[in-house]
Length: 278
Image (cartoon, rainbow, N blue to C red; front, top):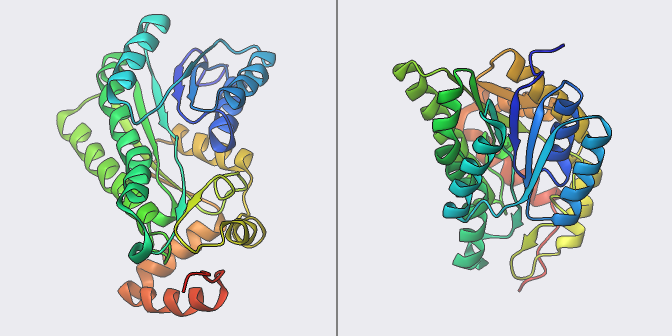
């Protein structure tokens, strides 16, 4: 028996990466799972794997940007299981491109999924988390919610917004004395397909950038990330940093202050793949 046994756990973006790893980790701890993703094939494979572990699971195709659908989903999950104990707002996408050359639609797409998807999921499930008497909300931000990076203005905006939203919500839960813990997660470089599945702005060599990310930046496996997240949830941590890169860079940014931006610009200008745009 573990503290997760019998808990109803909701995970968005469960078709791959950290979402799938979380589902498998929590299935092994006896949780009852509500899994969703836009990738039906990936979600089906996750369901197959958690079912093999003996987990009770409900799966749904869900677009977290569709607010009405998210609210309907929350109600359906609560009705199906009778309660909701934990929600992992994990669904996310990536975009690489300079702001000057990017279109509004590219920026808005990232904000819709990575920020508004988190807000939609939180708003829809929060009443159920409160009603459970033992709620825990886990929102996935990023290392890029702690420091900025050129070529990531859209992603930085969304992930910084998730951080601010989550931290403010935690304060509100404490003031209201609601039985809901709130955790913000900041993964560093994780070995997932997020870079390969990203979109890119004009002139960006996405294949080269994805290869650079996979070989130079992605150091932590999704399984290691899931274990760290679950460990943070067990300890009710308000913030969880994943990977030595996230821990080191977070400490460095707090140490040097805004001057980190000039250093990042110099280093990134030397090591990041160059745009082919003229």
